[in-house]
Image 1 (cartoon, one colour):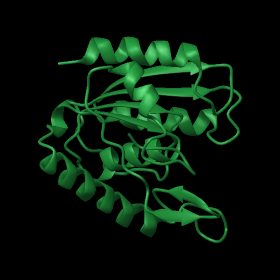
Image 2: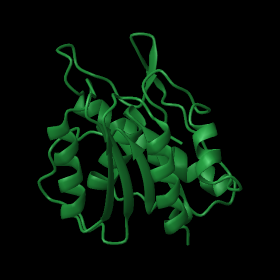
Image 3: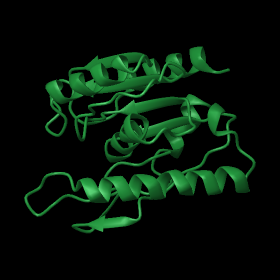
Length: 185
């Protein structure tokens, strides 16, 4: 579970329990604090993404996942990442740039953080992503660019859009659960 800005390792626990009631959960708190809120990567002074922070913190996150999955005897290839906002962003970035071992994800309100020139082959990856039409943080254009990038990697991409904002709502959860149920292996 990868939380949104200001969250912690337990924030998505109820959602993960709804999606997969009998599965073990692993939540990882972003280790950075920006404006008093936990994050997985920082911004620069002008408000843009700090790409050095994004790169190094994504490496840290993947190493942390490796450590915990080994410690608790979990199979990363069977894990389903559940990410929201900042957490969804770092998961998508990891796939586009780092080659993590996890194969499936439910990404609530992700965005493309930096254009990817050389797209990897993600043909064994399945992703469900959502976006709200009234989202003040993630523009429709940015969300579409991310989904197009992921589709361009040959990933199996499913999209759910709703008329609300940057919130997770009931129809979104129902759609995510149906997707998860169909993608359990």
